[in-house]
Image (cartoon, rainbow, N blue to C red; front, side, top):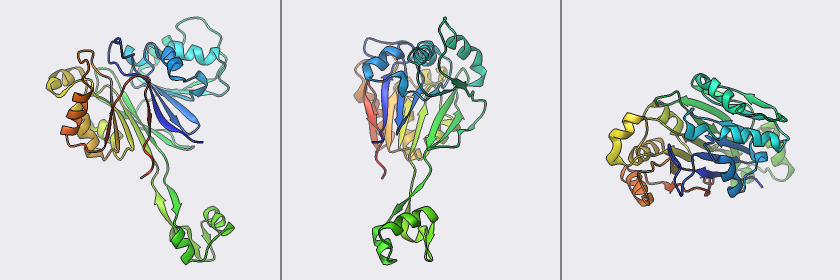
Length: 302
């Protein structure tokens, strides 16, 4: 059975708190797992969340600040210790290759798994073949940072009434799907477009074109909201977003489910305030103010 969900491993910005670990997010997408921004403590959070090294097929790092990358050393060594039976691919800003290499080889261990490095140097596609396309877009932060966007190809949904009108039933339905036409009836005649699902991951950034490009039309947008709106000056100065800005991005992009995360330690017990400010920005879709170890399902297709 296919599963599409976000497993939240950590939600703190800059420093962990008693209740929030450094960043870490595993996207389960059918049979594949994509680990985003493994901060310090990710390996232990994986254990608590019921996530194993075998669940990781791809690692995506937005930038090389510690709260988004210090967990790489432990995660990579765990992948090798557990002898994960499939190759793992890592994406990260090309300008930070030296940081990735230092973390990858921070201590001695035996390499048993093929770990392919595919650094990101510009906006554009990173993966174009397979069940989804993975794109990267440059963000605006004091160090080079990229957000990631997963897009499932559009498919077709067969319409029973249209099939019946053309007298197509039983095995002929499968033949039509495979061949695209049958007895002068095309696939377009008996089906509708089933829009592929879209997911985006946006971390440390000011408002910029890349944020909007990543968010456009997403079923789920995971986005930093480090600050509340009253601290917008601090947000802009340090290259971050507020809850209201995240809400406006989601509203303008037609997002279905907005997941707010990466919260400053200055706010305690403020989940309702983050949600309210996102709502006040005009977003009327589903909002989740993320907590560590939550599992958040990707919305079902509309």
